[in-house]
Each structure stands twice: as C-alpha cells, then as structure tokens.
Length: 448
Image (cartoon, rainbow, N blue to C red):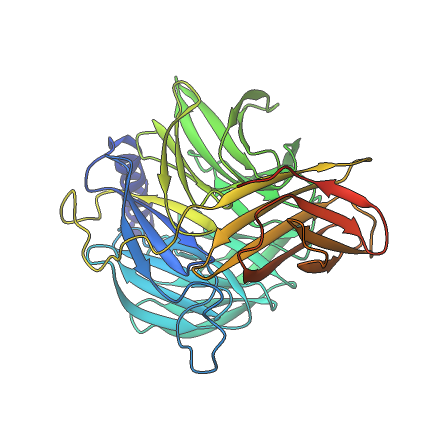
C-alpha cells in the first residue's frame, strides 16, 4: 500500500507540473560551457535575468592556482525543483545550487569527465554519469558525499529515472548499449544493444511508456519501450542530433529534436511509425531542449548562438530569442522556483558578448564545416567544426589574409575534426581550410 501511495503521489506531482501555465516564478537554465556560467532566464518575459558564475571564461582557466569550474556542461534537478545541479566535465565536479537564492550550497568531485546527472524519483540520491570512466557515481544530496559506484561499460552518457522509482535508464557515449538499472539494488538488470556508441541524451515520453535517445554521431534517434525493455524503432533524424523534448499539442504528443549540423529543430509524431511533421529553422547549432509545463513552448539552447530560442508549439515557429552564456549545452525548465518575478539574487550580468557564426562551403566534394568566432576581450577564439574530409589527414585553418595558419587539425577515422584557436583578433576576413600542403577544401565570405 505504501508503494502504491508513493507512486500515486509521484504521478500527481508530474500531473500538476504538466498542467501549470507559464508563471513569472518559473525559470529556464542553461549550462554554458565556455563562460562556465549557468544562465538564468524568465520564460514569462523571455529575458535573461543574469548568470550564476561558477568559474572564469576560457582561456582564463589554466593557472595552477585556479579553483573555479571548467566546462559547465550538464544540468539536473530535484523533484521538488528546489535544487539544480550543474556538471562541469573539465573540473570533474557536481555543483548543487539552491534555486530560490541562486547560491551554491554544496559541491562534489567525482571521476574523470562527468557528463550529466539527475536526482532519483524520491529525491534521495543523485546519480552522475562519469563519462571519462566506466561507472555512475551515486551522491547523497544532503551530505554531498559519494556513497556508491555503479559499474557500467565505458563512457556512460546520461541517466534518467522512471517516476515509479524502480528503474533507471543509462545511455553511453562510447559503447552501443543502454543499461537498465534496478534503483533499489544499484544493479544492472539488462543491457540493450543500440545502433551507435555515441548517445549523449535520453528523455521519457510524457506517459513514460518509452525512452527516446539521441545518437549524435550517426544522426539517429532510438525508441525503447519501458515495458518490454526492447528497441521499438530507429528514426533517421540528421547531422549532429543533440537533444530532444516532448510536447502535447492538440491531443497528440510530438517530439522536438535539435539537429545541430542543420540549424533546425525537427518535429516528429510519436505513434508506432514516427513521421516528420515540421522542420523549424533556428539559430546556430541547436543543442539543449526542454518543454514548458503547459506544453505551449519548447526552449532551445544554441551552442554556437550563445543563447536560447523559444518555439511556439501551436505554430512551430521561433517567437523569441534571448542572449545567454557562451556555448550552452544542457537546458532545463523549472516551474515555481523563484521568490518573485524579477528576482535576480546572486546573479551577475551577462559576462560575454554575442558570437559570430560562419558557414564554410566546399570548394569541391562533400566537405562540410562551420566556424564560431567569440570575443574574449583582447583576444578572439575561433572554433572550427570540420566534417566529411579525408580520414587521418592534417588540415590547416587560415583567417583573413594571413600567410600562416592559425591552427591545424588532424581528422579522425570518420574524417571529422574540431578544435579552438585563441589569439589576437585577426579573423577579420575569409576563413579558409586547406589540406596540409594541398588545395583549399572549405572557404567562407568575410564576416566583418
């Protein structure tokens, strides 16, 4: 009887959240990887209220005396919405933040390169996937101490809990499997094979009958039944499939999937055969996604756009844009957390400027790429994303009329490379990518 009562209470709590209209006391949060901030937005006014500063902006994170966080990347929250957790994969930390005051109330250091974390359904544990190793770190959210480790395959990518409190689902970033974990015993009860080893995100459908997980490397989404614990379908979604969110629109549940390489959000039906319903153009490199409790809005973090866009689910159009921290990754929506509509306690003003995005075009062949330029005060960062080039080959990046490259990259076995160059503000002309000692493969127009 106690278990049934608890399950009913959990179900009621989720039902209340699902029906609540957007309130001035609600907040949207993004984990900003380059500025090491958590940006805090008001969804009622579509404005940035300020940022929770957890560390310094890149590149000011390299001193041996530096104690701030590095690569603020993942977000999770408690069932009562009173605690937000921010995962920093460069400093191996889990930061516990009081959502009413925006103050850090605790911190836990875990193993190498944690990625995401979440509270258990009863709020008594926090599970953090340690992606650079092979386990999930279980943390007591009262003492902030690690109490247990759950052994997994290499590279767990994210974990989410079914609200009945019995099962957790963990995807991987290095192994093509999903682990089904018994919450009470902390043991893996089943391992499901999937189509790709790189799965950074998973989310439950609103009725918790399925999980949908993204495969960033191959541009797909896998569906798994939470009843049969079997794969029920795979959807071809597109280049750099990042996160997804669900919204109930006109009595039907739709999936909103961020496709970073195409700068769009794709909307799918969720019936037995998922169908593409709409393609919504967005800003640069859409990444994180979360739905408002009333299903009227989906919020999208723009990794290269340094902000958040708001999609109206009735029209499938972007209706607002808000500037935020640099390179936002995870995004969450929390209802009824602030003490007042305009409360900005312990927040700092936006620490960064807007980014400049440059699309690279192939001179010949199928090469793809794009560049994001960010001002860092007296220097600039130029981050290059290169795809569909020759495997295991060096490519040089040139900025403006410079005779020497500003950076060089070697592609992996899939012909991909990504890296950041930091130096004086010299990216004032075309960006060109050349094969080392060879011809130009990608180029752009001037961006200033």
